[in-house]
Amino acid sequence: MKAATFTKALPALAEVPFDIRHVQNLVVGAGPAGYAVVSSLLDAGSQPIAWVDPEFRSGRLASYLDVPSNTKVKLFEKFATTPSCVSKGAKTAVEGFKNEDPEKGCQLAAAQSMVVKLSESLHQHHADQVKARRGLISSLALNNGIWDINQGLLTADRVFLVTGSHPRDDQLYPGLTNVPLDDALIPSKLSGQVTPDDTVCVVGSSHSAILVLMNLLEMKNGPRVVNLHRSSLKYAKFRDDGTIILDNTGLKGSAADWAREKVDSGQLERMGKLCRIDTTKHDPAEALKTCTKLVTAVGFERNALPNITVAGKQLQDIQHDKHTGTIIPDKLFGFGIAFPEEVTDAEFGHKEANVGLWKFMRFARRVLQSQ
Image (tube, rainbow, N blue to C red; front, top):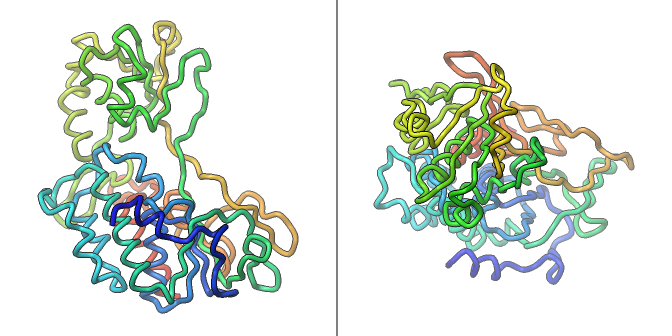
């Protein structure tokens, strides 16, 4: 079943209310991390589960179908095959990888298709335990240990926020025409927003920033590019014991290969196509005067959360335990890119947000199957 067909097949919350009044768990969000939470709860025997998402199309992953992954195919396959509750559907879900090298990345379209197929399989085989609805959760009110969802829609013992994030838009240089990061990551969308006469300022040195540079500088008759950054390019290092140094902050896959060949070598700067400026050492003011467009690739921030109250009081400044996902002990949890696990780099000792499909699955299973 295609993603659009599966989405339409799910009942809309506004049209078909839940057929039960109380659940043990409410999971808000059906991206990869939302699926990881639901499948982990099922495998742990923690049910019934209400699962709500506006689309059930794999969250923001559906926006990046033409983007190359920085995750190896074998880890996408591991994401699919680890939960026992969807063992029947996992084989079909990973068919999109059959011609891919398991030790390399792939287009995110294959990963998105996998998540949708896994969600569909879970829905088909566990409809009695998991009640899935298309819709929005707007309010969560905790009183006497029980959550009231959307003012009487449903009650739940526990709530899991897996609501995702979106690119930050810090409006760093208001005088430039902004090109949204989501568009800049897709060559077909980017080509309609820049011309050979443009000079595009790209802010950042992350994986996303390098993909944008690659899209701009490999474009036929593309623009000149100014890249503002605060650190040199970093590359992930794969150890023989399976440890990955700079796992979450270092470049991987095709972005790393391209950056080594074209950026770190100085090739593009010698050709006059790229100017890189370390803003911790140099003032970019003069270079910015030549720029016409701006792409900001400086990280992500949480999507809007439901209105959350506890005993009638608004829950402010929502923070999670970065090792357990806990927001309110035994009552409210956060997972995924909006509430990531924190890990320590094995070589350099700094803290990193642990982001990626297999990482979301591993974290959810470690936490939820130990409760």
